[in-house]
Length: 194
Image (tube, rainbow, N blue to C red):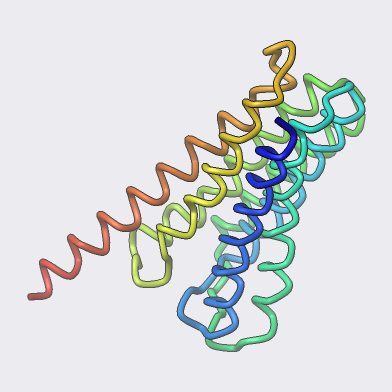
């Protein structure tokens, strides 16, 4: 069954690769605050899960952090992929960083994952607002990779504990929500314009 998790991680990296190329082309405009925290929070959660004894089920969570890290770096290479960072973005990013610092101080896997989830969700808010107001700056379909990859984690879960299921469940919900929201919003804007 390990192969399902590996395929899931590759799916996440493949969809991240598509978003990375769209970033380099300038057809999407990633919010740097969001994508940096989206890289850091899952990577911390993956390392916390691994340190708590979770093995293969951690791979898709790790991949869901590696892809955003690459997208964050790619956002610096194309000036047309720039998205202005606002005070709201910085507040969400700051709260995310505080949550990550709080985890570092506790060194408890459950607390780490809860705080990583909180940080990740706070980091998602700027992209949610941007995608709602300017849906042309996002491609909702590319968020499906994260949801599909996270779903693969469930083939390797042994104990069904918070440590094992929290981040994959969150990633599924976030990926599906962003896909639905951004693509519906694009349809609404296009319909209104015509």
